[in-house]
Image (cartoon, rainbow, N blue to C red; front, side, top):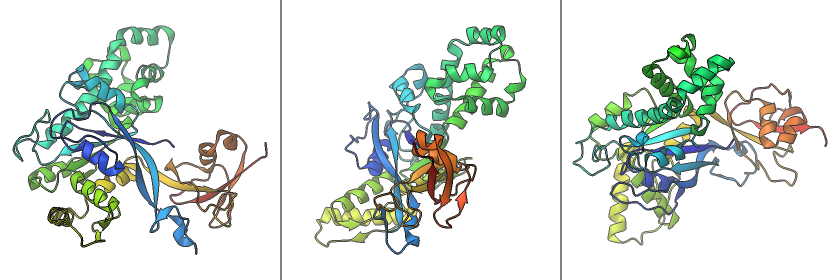
Length: 394
């Protein structure tokens, strides 16, 4: 499946640093609001255990038994209060965000930037306010779109007997909302039992808030965790969502040092290995400082944010389709050529369609490459499955 994660947050929270760290893209990073004006699009990687570890030879597509599965990531313009009313770069931000299946909210856990993203003393700003504000802005953006033609739409539903969830999903399609999201939100809020003509403004905002939570699940990267007051981190960790302490600046420095062959570093590891002693005083001092950060946090947290967004927040699995179930390869002998991200609960027929519509249409059965057992179309796939799809000839 095509996967896009959005990076969101107020200006100067470390989004662009986080983006550069996970993509090593050349983006502008500065200590003032609105450094990012146009969204930055890039590719990052989620890590999965590669099945080739079970074979005598490696696939050549993994690093030390870890398969890197590409996903799209988008770093959007910093969000300021009342963005939903078009303030700052609000409309641009929210329009860009519609492409994302999940959001990593990069929060300045140090409290060293105010609501607008301007630098203040460490601990002066409460990062919980940033979490509330981002959710509120996205909710009110959805509400603004829905409310725009609501009187006309609600009369149309009543007069023509149209399905409520169809009309709402059509109105919000541009925001990435589908019928499933609307249905689930109607049930969760109890509004499914209330005549839509009688909905209050509060009801509609509650519906939009629930649709936001369902359609754009969110993980918090508690950034600048290495300088954050302990109280701030504890408050964030008490929130009812995944919170990962991060230091995007440390991750970027490690990635850059690894790229320049100064150190050996695998993203997500809590350690790195020196490859040269030929360092300047500044480089030595920098690496010592990063070592202390990583020692304190365990890891920089950046790769953990990507992995947990994909596997926990979005509940995805990795499946490896092959054409030769004996060699686990394609027709020309490339071992484990592809790795597909799929929703947990997907079956063999879903995989066939993901490979190609024609293969889905002509599906006969699948084969588990580990056991050589034949699998039916409804067989539920597991994380790490190696599967051959058999279909009828054209």
